[in-house]
Length: 218
Ligand code: DC
Image (cartoon, rainbow, N blue to C red; front, top):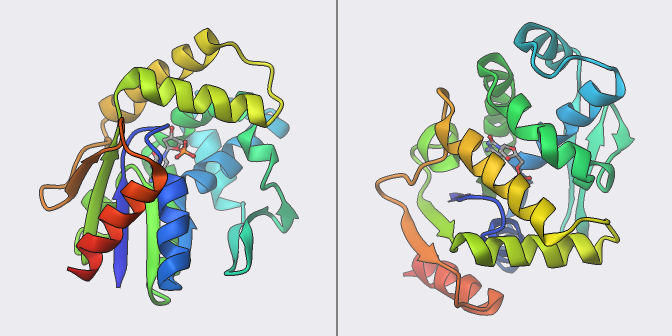
């Protein structure tokens, strides 16, 4: 069974997706982590992120893998190197939407995501899972929250990671990513027609997880 969870940044997708996957003993596939890993490599190698051909060329020579151990947090490997925490750096967050809007890059990532998902039962979170990657997913969710709440959550998260960002920095980044992720020509963020919409603004994580599990089991 494939479970697709889409929505904007800061809505709680990944937290919920991880818990749902754990509870069902499904594979968790963080598709944003793949775009982040490629962004990290581009920045490290000085590849111009605004040059689609160069970034595509880089993607073709990059190996991204996700190490799933039900007992441990998901590990992200970039050419065999553990980049799990590096991909959360603010500089990656700032540029990732530019990388993710490149058509050929998306083709490569979508292929990888399908390969991983087709291994068995999986929960995938991202922007285009229910619309493009797995349009036939058995269960689809669109997880949302009002902008200010998403900013608050991401701000707390960044403070917890010891990042020196102000609430204004986080707000500007989210507004920028919302605009690029929703406005891009290829696979923009949008709710699949058959997805269950959940507004998490006033819900606890547990309440959201219960709603998701209830819909899956219902
Ligand atoms: O979920 P996240 O913040 O880690 O995702 C990082 C970026 O990657 C996000 O701003 C848009 C992009 N992304 C995407 O375009 N498609 C996906 N399936 C997942 C993420």
